[in-house]
Image 1: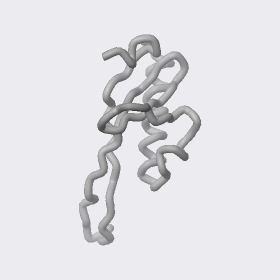
Image 2: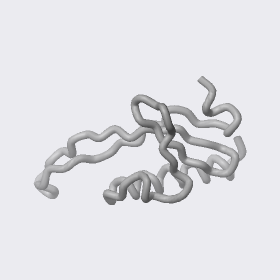
Image 3: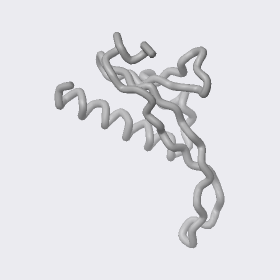
Image 4: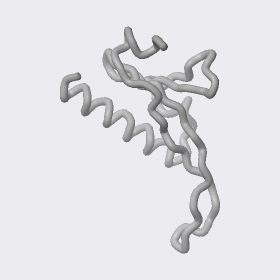
Length: 91
């Protein structure tokens, strides 16, 4: 995988994580994120050029600290598979 493609994938994942931490629903993040049909647990797809990132979001309770006493949840992006679009959906 070329360096520019790697950088674009990292940038896409970092942007996705930033949007999720801001509380934006996945469907509203951007046009390159789509929910995959028929997956259990739910999986999503991030499209970057000819490459795809299959991922899921796991919600975990947020640790309460003195600086942030309010309880809440935070999402962790778990990358299931990353690869070229012709291969990433094959199991």
